Length: 107
Image (cartoon, rainbow, N blue to C red; front, side, top):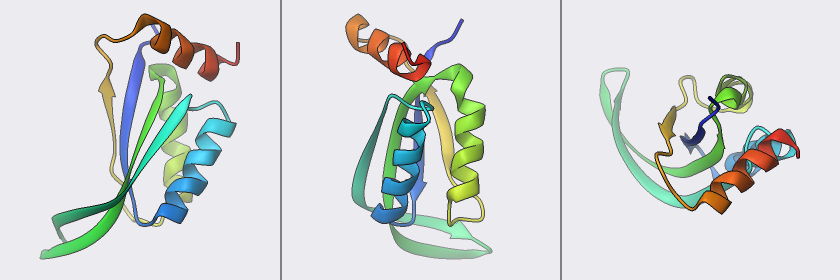
């Protein structure tokens, strides 16, 4: 079964998020992308604690599109190891979930 899915990602800039988000929606890899600017992140990378400003991007898609979505994001992302994780949508407005499926499938 092709389940609806949220894909949570972080980007280095709003410009990068807009470009990647546009590509995902244009190519029907996501029905919608939300971009949340100005997130502060604290993380360990290469043995040191880092503090950065990032942009959150959430794509609404179908589970069957996730592998291709990941490849597109990785190919266009500025990070060496971008955060791209999926969260299954367990329930929600049936009309909205149907809209996601229709948009991604191109119906």
